[in-house]
Image (cartoon, rainbow, N blue to C red; front, top):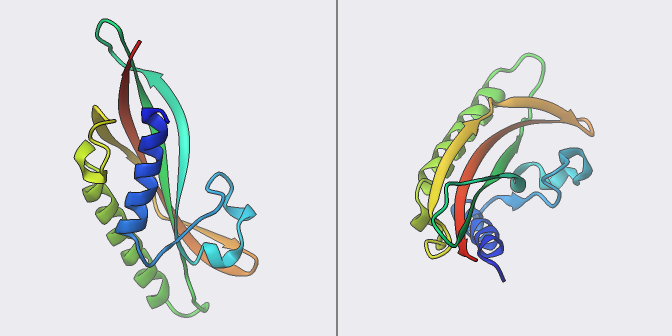
Length: 150
């Protein structure tokens, strides 16, 4: 296996460790294509574009972008505000935990494969309805530099 495929596996392993009570979203590329029960309290991993990185002689180096998305169900009625506030605060806590765990290359067992980890952008907390169920979601982008010898 290549370094980048090892990094992918290590990210998934770390997400499962950091969020042991969450389910993994089977298709992180299209949330509506997942069964509702997988979106209730879940994480997903998406591979995004790569960009070349400054490289040394005889090294192939690139920044690969990954996005981790989190989802939570919101059970509410038209007159209650507490359920959405509770879900948003839990999402903010999850985002904080995720950022803290992924700040360094040594944080998820892949230090031999990773040169640099940069935390990219955070989306806001977004609300969506799917199959008559209310959810919130947010995403965090990470840029991970991986180098190989030619």
